[in-house]
Image 1 (cartoon, helix red, strand yellow):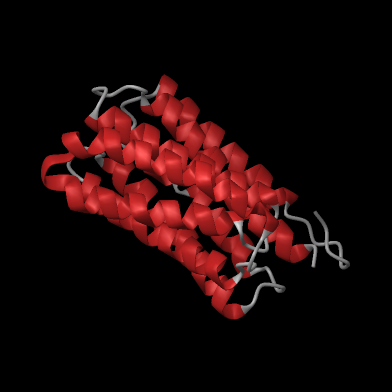
Image 2 (cartoon, rainbow, N blue to C red):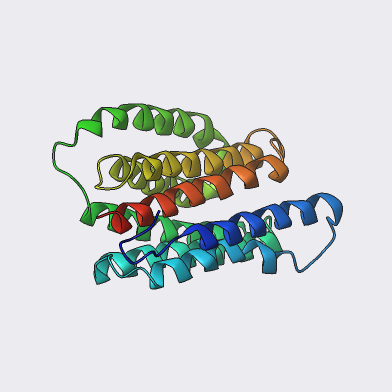
Length: 219
């Protein structure tokens, strides 16, 4: 986790985890607290700071990753304010965040990566989600399917990118968290609850982002 100069991501990881845990405790014990988005956005912001201080990430890749972190943070704020009325703006923010990570993974892709065999399970999972969701989406069919395409491509590219496997695992967990959110909204009437889906999201973003940063720091 350290470079030759002793740089460590551990402080950023600690702040990320502390903020994520604090947010969940607020949601459990003070569910009516209206400013919880201030806490929820901290993990994405601390990631943005970690990206900015990373000197071994090429500038275009740094911009792409920073875009991913900041738009995920915007989505965090939007959905925490009102996940029902602001669902589409929140969806759009996270879509742009995934697009940022997608571009980063595209720039770091490895032709004929030995990990490409894992693309098939991701694709099958995505097709299964489409099969379940399409009949339930109504007027939201186009934005939700566009979102599913983008996050699927992002996860597939993470698998074949020059990053630690941790990042690809994080991308899939991120995809899983969005799938659970979609099932709760469109299929199972609020289940699983945010108290389950949000920790899955925080875990996915943590592994995805720090998996990338640790990859470039170890070069």
